[in-house]
Image (cartoon, rainbow, N blue to C red):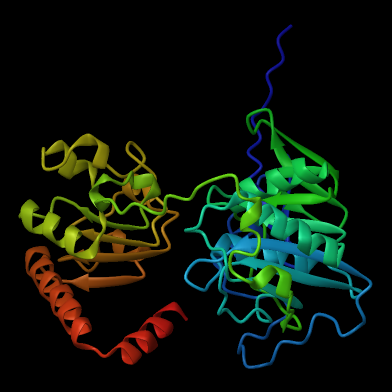
Length: 398
């Protein structure tokens, strides 16, 4: 007798608890207006008034008896969303006698108290652009020796943190859970058997957290104190451990970057009539080029540029759609983009409901104007004095 197993997707259904933690609900079908829908689509922060004027309280003011350590790389002085979620996760599961320490590999300008950290150790000798896995491993080991954390939490990503977490687990022979989609103070949950099932285990020494497992908007703040560890902060202090040679970053044409990996994408639809001008704009922005299915079917772009349900799913920080109406298949391909800008003649096109900003106008005219604006901005920046340039850069990074 054959038994048919119903596929369970651990990403849904789920609920977000009052504390902001995701809880997988197996075998339950949610309805519109449920707690899941409210958690996904509401801007409400647990414990905060709708006015948002009330100051958030400190998570705890009691003396620390143990430590939860969060480790993450910074980029241009800031933590990405995945790292912020991991830091929030540690703060949410910490009890009043547990401090949340953050070891950041790179420079950090973020308000760490607002992110939930009580103690911060900044190692500016490292960042995501530096390949020094052994040095980072020894820096983490030194931090663990100093703080003796009960658990270590890291983002499970492909940009350094996930690799470092696995390296340290092997180095310390520590228990580890990867791709964690559910977390509490006592257990972790992961997808198993090609996401057909869900498994839990006791909280291990090292937790590598998947993206989207926690709401990073906290109802409290941390102490936000900076910790000095001189033996870790000096650049090159751990270089003796390196057995790799960093050849640096090689700049390539943005058009050669796979759309799935691109951080900035300009995408053309049927409303784009001048492909050469569009490609010139992409070059001016340093952006990758995408296209709608209609534009591909019309022969304007090759099939590898197609974005949507029948093309590629992208996760760009900035996605600008020129002359794309926004069919449901295309919107599915850009659902994970952070900022979507729509350029369209039709202000009621479906994509305008997804866009963070909509520009109503003719695509060719706006393309030409943007090319001129970028050229003017770059020529103006060359004439700005170095101190002013530095101030502008600091403001952008902030």
